[in-house]
Structure formats: C-alpha cells, structure tokens
Length: 451
Image 1 (tube, rainbow, N blue to C red):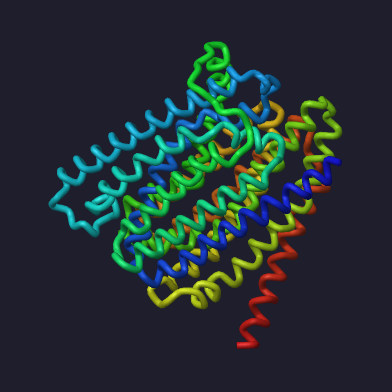
Image 2 (image 1 turned 90 degrees about the horizontal axis):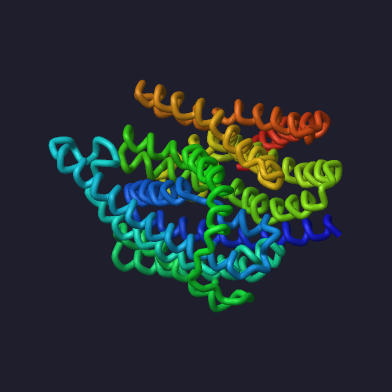
C-alpha cells in the first residue's frame, strides 16, 4: 500500500513538475532571443533577494500542518493562515527597506561605473520595489494547499502550478515581444503569485479559513518553526547565496550567463527535491507516526534507491554534455554558460542530502538538517569569497560545484547517529555515480562521432 502510494504520487509530482519546468524552459528559449543577458542577471539577483527574505523568515507552516495530529481543529488552521498573512506583510516591508538601502548605496557611490557590479544598476531598485508585492499576495494563499499535500491529493496542486506557469509564460513572452524590456520578466512572477492565490481558494477542496489567533497554537507553530527558519536561512545561503556574493564582483551580463547555467542545471534538481518535499516527507511522516523504526529505515532506503539513480544519471549526462546542450539551444551570446553548466552539474548530488534531511524532519529533528547545511555553508561562502577576491570566476564556480562534500559526509554521520545508516546502500550510491559518469562520457563520445 505504501509503495503504491509513493509510486503513484511520485509519478504524478514528477510529471506535473517536469511539465511545469519544460514550460519555463520553452519560455526561456524564446525570451533569450528577445532580451539581453543583462535583464536576466538583474531579475535573477532581485528574485534571489525576494526568495532569500522569504526563506530567512520561513516558519515552516506547511511542515507544521503536514506533521500535526491536531488537524481537525479549525482554530489550528485559522491560526496558521493568520500567521502566514502577518508574515507576508512583514516580508513586504523588509523588501521596501532593502530597496531603500540599495538606493542610498547607489546614491553614495554614484562616482562608480554602473557596470562595476550588478548592485550599481539603477533598475535593480525599481525591480525590488515592484516585486515587494509578492509576499503579500502569497500570504493570503489558502491552507488547503497544505492539507492536500498532507493527504497526497496532489492532482489539483499540480494543475494550479501548471496553469500559473502557462499564464506567466504567455504574459512574459507577449510583453517581451512588444516592449523588449526588463518588466516583461518581472510581470511573470506577479502573474504566477496571483494565479496561485485565486486558485488555492476557488479550486481546492476544503473549508475556508478565517482570521483567528489561538495563543497556544501560535506558540506551538512558532516554536517548531524556529528551527525551520534557521534551516531555511542556511538553505537560502546555500541555494541562492552565491548569487548575492557573486553580484558584488561581476556585472549584469556575466550574472545573466551564470543564471542561465544555474537554471539549466537546476532543472533536474528542482524536480527531484519537489518529489522529496511533496511526496517523500508526508510518507515518512506517516511511517513515523506508526513508531516503527525498522520500517522507517526500510521505507527511507526504498525511496533513496531509485532517487539516487536518477541523480547520478543527471550528473553524468550534464557534466559531459553541458557545453553541447547550450550551444545547441542558445546563440553565441550565451555559449559561455556551457562550461558553467558542466561544473554546476555536481550540485545535483545535493538532492541526495535534501531527501535524506526529510527523514530528520519526519523525526522532529530539524536541527540536524540545519547543522548539515551549516557545514556546507562554512565551506561555500569563505571559499567563494576567496576565489572572487582573487578575481577568478572559474575557481569560484568550482567552489560552488564541490563545496557540498562536507555536508554529504555530515548527513551520513547524522543518519548513523539516529540508526538509519546503511553502508551497503551508501556504497551503491557511489557506484551509481561512477557508472553514470561513464555513461555520460560514452554518450558524449558517440555524439561527437555522429556530428
């Protein structure tokens, strides 16, 4: 029964999310022919700032709902929704403060060329001001999203994501075609947020929520969320923080090329982690509620086996074929992204850490996930800063690609400490990666012979 549920939900989520990513990819192919790399760099760094503030203040509302035993209590869901709205307004204010700070920074450094680094570009302030509306919109999303996820009733959630993606791509491409400016890209994010808000209330099953703040519930949710917030902070710095740091050393054009490579390399990673958080976490929580540790370990490695094979295949293919892929799909302005993509392919292995960390959450030990991410961060940020201070962008990309290795080791150690570690399964993962690299090289070799 559990295997059937996992398989059905995994196929559904993978198919839906992959289709959503393909829509983004198709839109990206069109937009790179209509807009310059500089626009992608500017919007990319602005979205990183928005996502960063969002993740830094993440109180784990979805995790609280999914793992709660008190789900029938409407006061619980009403309180979560009210806290979510309050947080949305606070995030918007923080973004306005960041935009004001950046404006002041630019005013005090107006003697520096606008091309010195991306933070000197005047358009960045305006983009941040417009995007500050997004947290308010998302704060009003229905908690029925979390309930549907908890019960693995995922079909309607997937439809919402697909409709939002289709509308965003259409609006963005049309505006880019007619106006050829940065606001076409910005509009897509706002359309996505508005669509998800409306459909979460009008399309999902479940009773409507209302404003209510139950003191005990709020304390419990925020107490659990404090570790989620810290974990989200480290997670943001790991997944997006390198862009903030790179922005202080490179211009908008190079940031645009890095953003493209990151988008292509992140395609598979996003699909895998989406399955991990949407399917595997609720399933592991369900097993954990049975209080059977042996069954939890068995279920965990059943999930990991197929997951690790997919990770390995993606890494092997992109490392040896990234340059060819970029040259095939994009014009000469974007070809430097190919080498970056090949290096960033190794970051997909982080997905193995991410799915392993879902079991920490299911056990109510979010601090282990936080510690794991801090280990990664302790290598990434200093290493990248040193590389960029040396004005060596290529070395910086290599640091980004391989700084996850200490985190991987810490994750295995944590699994051992909570009696979920299996040496045989972990050695199998290494074997998968080795064979996938051989496969990727052979594919590249015969591809070159056929051209």
